[in-house]
Amino acid sequence: MNYGVVVAGGIGRRMGADKPKQFLTIGNKPIIVHTVEKFVLCNELERIIVLTPEDWIAYTRDLLKKNLGDALMDRVSVVAGGETRNETIMNAIAHIEKNYGLDDDTVIVTHDAVRPFVTHRIIRDNIEAVLKYGATDTVVAATDTIVESQDGDIISMIPDRSRMYQGQTPQSFKARELRETYNSLTEEEKGILTDATKIYVLKGKPVKLVKGESFNIKITYPYDLDIAQTLLMGEDL
Figure 1 (cartoon, rainbow, N blue to C red):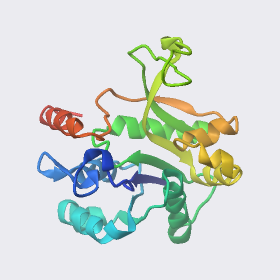
Figure 2: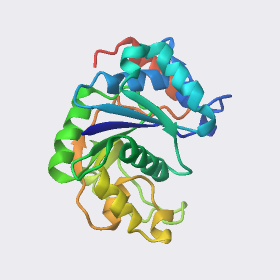
Figure 3: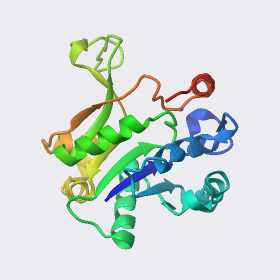
């Protein structure tokens, strides 16, 4: 079975708002509603698991029910996230295993709740690729020169831009393999994780690139809200 996993565990300090950024509104609906709608309307996904801070579970469930209605909410579960992104994803896998069962072909399509412009094409391409390769990362080619600095003061290296990509989400995995690989990491390795695909990179496992879109932005800072509003007005995704 294929599951959408919408990660809404952040509290959004960089946004400077009085509530987590996924609950801020664009186009008369909270960001998280826009995102979850994209997943529930994707027939290739059997269920959607939304992970949120424990104190916000009831609020999230009520908010989604109000906007999606009972019929669509039948496919949505809201559960508690973890202390880190990867612990949150492990919570999603545990929820799937407990309630629906887990086998070698169980797929999870993990996505940021604050990337509301994901498309059906991107989700579908993730599912097709993960079934063949076991793990995927949605990316766009880097358009700016990438500069590396070891000390944050002097340039150490300028990599070849033609080989550089900017990571987005979804990131998709065969759930059982992801959990086994994550559990095989040392505590030191877990401490340097930046996202779930790095689990595979650390273990030398392949991760298939899936083409993203420039408009598949992550809403992190206040000015991102203005960009999102503009994108929403012209959205035909």
